[in-house]
Image (cartoon, rainbow, N blue to C red):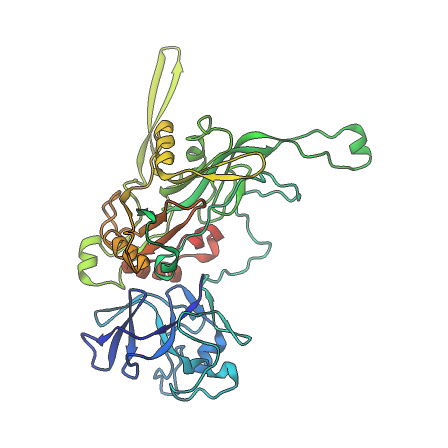
Amino acid sequence: MHCGYVVKVSDLRKHSNADRLQVATFFGNDTIVDLSVQVGDIGVYFPVDLQLSEEYCAVNNLVRKKDENGNNVGGFLDPEKRNIKAIKLRGEKSDGLFMPLASFAYCYDQAVASPDVAVVNLSVGDQVTVLNGHEICKKYIPKRQSRVGGYSNGNHTRKTKVPYAPLFAEHADTEQLAYNHGAFKAGDEIEITLKMHGTSQRTANLPVLQPVKKTFWQKLFKKEPNPVYAYDYVSGTRRVVMEDFEGGNSFYGSNEFREPHHQLFVGKLNKGETVYYEVVGFTHTGVPIMADGSNKGLDKEFIKMYGETTRFSYGCEPNGKKVLYGNDDDGPFELVEEAPESDVYVYRMTMTNEDGFTVEYTPDFMRYRCEQMGVKTVQVFERFTIPAKCKKPGEYVQAKAEKYYDGPDPVGKTHVREGVVVRILNRPKFAAYKHKNFSFRVISGIAKDTVDIDSMSEDMIAEL
């Protein structure tokens, strides 16, 4: 849920390097506020990756603007993007934006005056996106410039209304751990795994639409034949079903790099199985699968450790080696050629019957099947049960997650890890929550502002 949260200030301290600033904590995130904020104040916390509406920013003077002398007389948000980013300000982290309830007074035809202005219909715990008919915020998606004629995303979805693979389910989106503490209960069995920064892919052995020749009468009367389905292998990105791997958006060039990973599962999946995995490293052209990120928004120690640029390589090389096997008149041979590397890490598997009923594989059984198929799975950090007498299960789980969500990535070891995924194992349906570290959020925020968004697919933008 991409929204603002009504919160009460309970944790407030002085800024370590600025006399006129303070640091409040919401959902475990440090957020810089001014001196007017006091313990006990009620306001709205806007997390990173939200975009505030033009109206809300204008009323509250939140975007940058200059007077006739060139001095900034507005806020710090970009006038066009109006997006909230993780930043460091004089050595302190700021991971969101806190605003007083008075900032919403205009939604009720009241003047935005002082923090004691009464605003109705808001109380601690409420979520805010639209208020009394006024849009307040939404998920930030970088704006794509329009092109004459558009461009192909290379996934070749059918123009016909007949579904190509009707039982091929998208992977469920994972919500943020910090804002979903209520999802956890005492006694829940939890597993914490590594979150990897790549592009999502899925492969399944499911009923797939088969080509059917029209009969003479169907051609004569211009009628479409009834669809025929048979079990076959199908692949897709997070949201799009691919009928082939040709073409592609102009960032990747094509989806050719996905085909070898799809082929890893061909002939190995049982009927009804779907496998969800992350593809990391480089495309077949040597382009990083996920855009490089600048580390300029982080401190000197971070740059000393990881360099000025983060490349999410996960141990893959843009100029790796590929071995080709063949036979000629002299017998079997091996041919080694230079080729960009990419890799696959499975994080979920399901079984779907012909009626569309899906059973979630347990992580243990998923890993067993992947071992049989010879493919990798995401790294597991810890499995535990929330104590029966735990009074705040969500906070207990978050504290556990924060033992693992930061530091060097354990796979590539050359860049910071993205974070972790916390999964509740004792639920009939997939229930998982992500927790990204501050450094990654800073890097991905800068990447959103600098990469060629116009050349990226919606799947890629969603991964940032």
